[in-house]
Structure formats: C-alpha cells, structure tokens
Length: 119
Image (cartoon, rainbow, N blue to C red; front, top):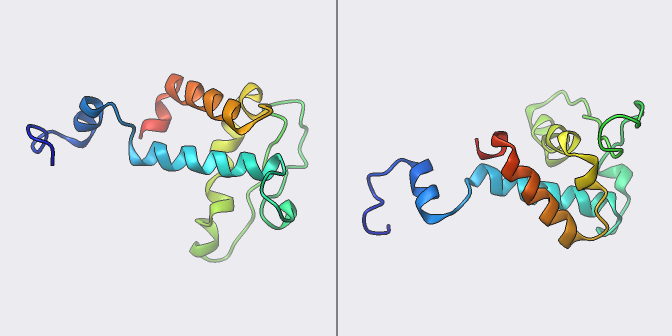
C-alpha cells in the first residue's frame, strides 16, 4: 500500500492516484469488446454472441442490443446480457466510431461526463 493512503476510503484513494474504479474499468473493457463484435473486428458469428434489437432503430445509437431470456442466474449474468443496458445507453456518436482508437476516446469522454460509470 502506498504511504498515507491506507486509511482513506476507496474512492478517495482512487482520486488521489488519478485512477478509475474497478467497476468503470470493467464496463469500459466490456464496451470495447462489444464494439469489436458489432464492427466485425472479432471474428465469428455475431448472432451467436449478441442479438440486435428488432425495435425501431431511429432512436438511440443505431446498434441497439436485446437481452436474451435465461432461466438460470448464470445466463442472466453472462457477458452478453451484462453489457446490453450500458451499450444501449451509449450515444450514436460513440458507437459510430470508425476505429477502436476513436471509439475508446469517445467512450472515455462519454464516461467522464456521466457519473453512473464510477459506481
């Protein structure tokens, strides 16, 4: 542990070290993986991993995903269901990025503006 941080609460230690919470870092990584699937960077059949919503795509980000129904908790908390709500909340500007680098920059800017990412 770094000297002087031992007795500080978690959020204060993060702030002092200029770091983001584990929750935010996990969500960021999840969004990057979804972006790779949506843009075809990850090889494989996207239909086996993610399901696009059949709802009207004129609202939201244009790449809306749909949660699958599972009978067990394992399925409910699976990556593909865990990411749907966060992905669907992203702005069209973020998900329409042409490269991973620009997506990451736009995602970071979006996350910085929205407190819900820092738990």
